Image 1 (cartoon, rainbow, N blue to C red):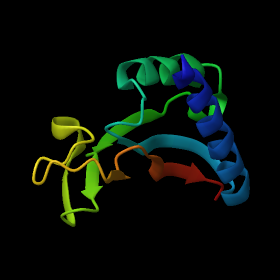
Image 2: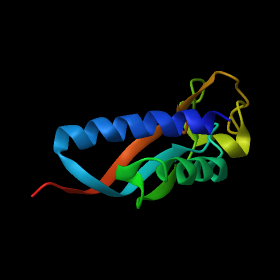
Image 3: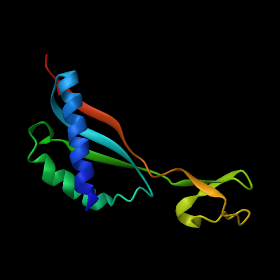
Image 4: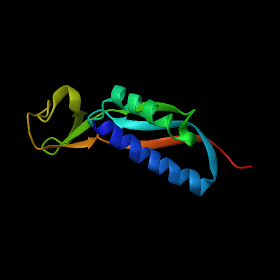
Length: 117
């Protein structure tokens, strides 16, 4: 379950951000997760809920997930198409000369927090 490893890395990043910005409480974290990132969102949320109870600055935080649709580019016909629906073969020209443009990311979009007065 690599979701726990990602949550641990996320928590480390949030700790560093909290220290730099003098934050005392994180209310929510919004993550953008690519549709083909390999992250199983239900397991990710479970890992977050388990970990946050053991991490004081995150104890009352809410995790918000946004999906980034997977899009593939075709070098042959110079067009984009939805990756999940069509896979590696371009539905417009049948070419396999394709590559993923987006959809495998995991990005911290927003952190809502309270800081020292």
